[in-house]
Length: 254
Image 1: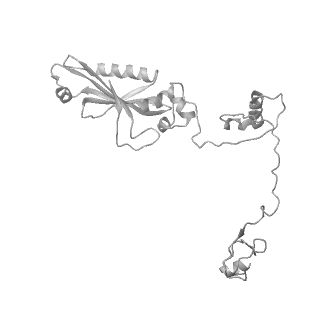
Image 2: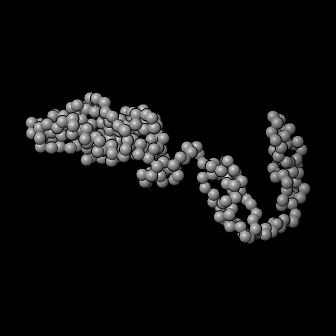
Image 3: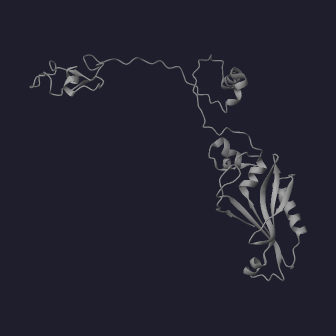
């Protein structure tokens, strides 16, 4: 048994990924002939282990490493999907491994683990296996059936309410789905954050002209402002106005 990460030129869609995890199974025996009956028996045991009770079939395919290659398809929600491919080990592969094909034979099988897990859990899209969002990622830790999760971005709403002292988080959590009625299934979770009542004192304003409504700006020098800087109490102040295409001098005069 040899599991590993493989790279293949596949179009990525709901049932294909370009970088799947795959496990290769090689069953070798010291007899010169391994027949189709043994191969079908191995296929049946594999399908029963991965997808208990699933309906399966095989079709003939050609591989460079097998003789009499088969593709294993399983019935999933009314659609036939490939689970694995297998066949009798090609004599050239045995010979390259240092085994005499006249004395050894065997079976070879390759299965994508993403596809197997997708079928086992009933996941609608194989790309969900690599999503990092906690509602999806935590489901990949077990073989429990898939629970639907929206693929849209999470929307969060903060609501402030005033409650009596007798209210607790449990009763508040019950009131929200009750109020939503038929739309209660849009809620994934409710987090209650309890804030204590706090009296806020208004900020004391400083005396004088420190808090002006409009910030003053320095003069551009093209108006009638004195060339000699007067004292701060008598210096003319020019207030900022929205730009309307006027010249600098006109804006300053305004």
